[in-house]
Image 1: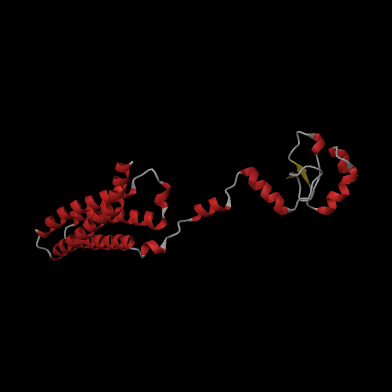
Image 2: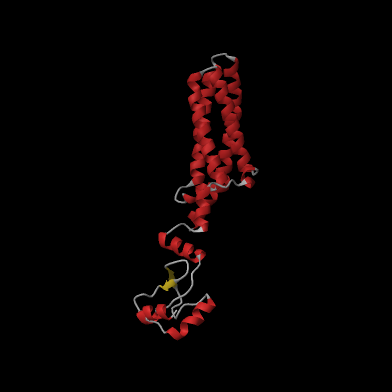
Length: 215
């Protein structure tokens, strides 16, 4: 012990008390581990504050993590995966998105069996609706706070209404059984999209417009 103290320039009289406590350095409060048994203080630029303390494997691992800039526990948990909000899936908005997704898939199957030229439109709307359902259910859309999500959702519904009205009335002219089924499901889906757009405008877009006018 006296050899370490003389090497570091610290007083040898205080060294046994430090080694017996296993918690304090002499006299610097912060240590920098150099081996599983010993560590040096961080204030190396001031020799009169050099000291010596014991460091275990846990302390050395935490010091290495701080040195290498590894993510903290919260940041690592955020990168591990997407947590699905089950309450959203059972909410009114979640049920609307799930209904739109299911009807879009049914229409895609009907177009695949009858008029394959129209199945691309249904497939595109299917993936767009699936993307919005994923973003809302995982709350991942909150990371893109600069985007106006109610407006984007409203435009999604309006574009889907236009697309499915066109393809549904175009498919019914073929007189095919699957095409007629696509027309029926298309009209139902248009009604669901119209109701969804109305709810978005009434509950999310209109209040924001009123608040901006008052400001």
